[in-house]
Image (cartoon, rainbow, N blue to C red; front, side, top):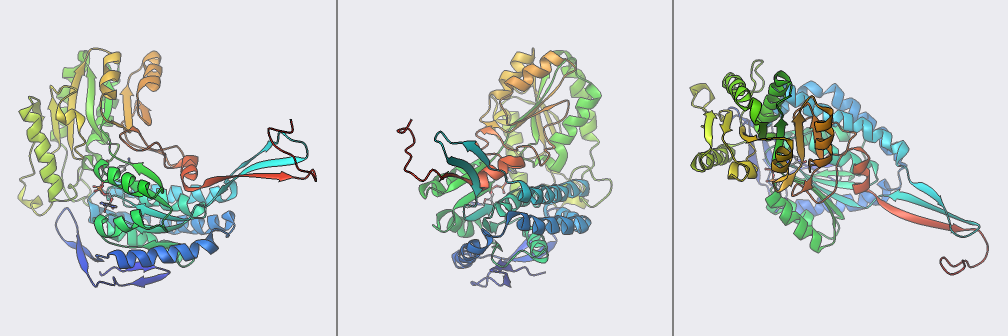
Length: 491
Ligand code: NAD
């Protein structure tokens, strides 16, 4: 199937006539043919968004919410199909793809409701016969730049709050997941979104993304992706004083203390480390284990990891799907070699899959390292694949120190039955998300999502925090005294 850009309410071919293919990472089959647009289409999309903003910003927020409610209803109706497309396009197993779509459904209904909330506040003025209030206001054109690993959740977490706040959108999805982006925008069109309010341009970061970062008609950038790109986005868009939100990488850890429920911990670890083949920003890639249970946990994990079934995510018995592409396989393998060369013990896995049935896909064996120290490269850098490193510690204080000794701060978790340990962990784990007796993944859409330190620049997605990024405050003073009253002077 050949996809088109969506600009000013029209599905249009790329002006430069260029296309590229979109592949199923599990078997190399072509999913779609996709425009490889450049500056011309991007500028046309920005222009359409700018024009639509003048009307859209004045549509009452509850009416904007009604459109989002229809979007949510349509997403729900198409959930199964969308999940299947997602598995074909980016490889995650069907159950997880359904969860990814569900995040979009939840966000649509949540943000639809925000149309009737979008609360500001009133406050007493310091002067008599004067009224003061603060209101939320739209900002303008939002450039939305997304990665491939949550092809429905991440775009909806950005686009829906942008829209409910009254902004218009130019959406540049990851080159690896255009088909899901296309489906999402088709649904928004069907739900009755006016022309120009959301525009979709397919193309690379260097050709489409760069224009969004530099064009003066784009007021804000909401970016999720790698730290390397995020730094570039921040510095380029920052030069133009755009508002920028960055959601970047993670090096998330699960802490398991001696008193943990080990059965539960094993389940949480497997789900967090090997779900989505380790390609979640919140994936667990470090396991910080108290010495008393270290050996027992290692043995049980090794056994369970060996039994994980790799395959196409549409097959019922598949536990772990492919990596996104061949570069990812090579990157993961490079880290495995670094781990070995730095002295870590390879317990399970450690190579691309040799199974002839899977040779057309990008499969890598789920891998466990033990004997890892906190400073090793595999314990510091984001691998973004199915590689888990065990780090042995003496006690909770050391576990927390190790957890916090990385450049990232997205998610962390602890398994313990002790209330004192629990509350110390909640206070001291320096991440934006903390789980108690659960793995590092599983965010719910009405809580703030994001990380500390190198994971971003302090903004949060989801919940009411999303409204803070996509709107700006206006302070309004209404003086009904009939005379000049001077704040701070007429006391
Ligand atoms: P990436 O940085 O390679 O790409 C992300 C997006 O940026 C893509 O759409 C890409 O085309 C675009 N881009 C690339 N160069 C650009 C440029 N010069 N200007 C503008 N846009 C440009 O990341 P990826 O490989 O797609 O995603 C994986 C990364 O995303 C991992 O590091 C992961 O941890 C992170 N991630 C973070 C979160 C979070 O919420 N913190 C969620 C999911 C993924």
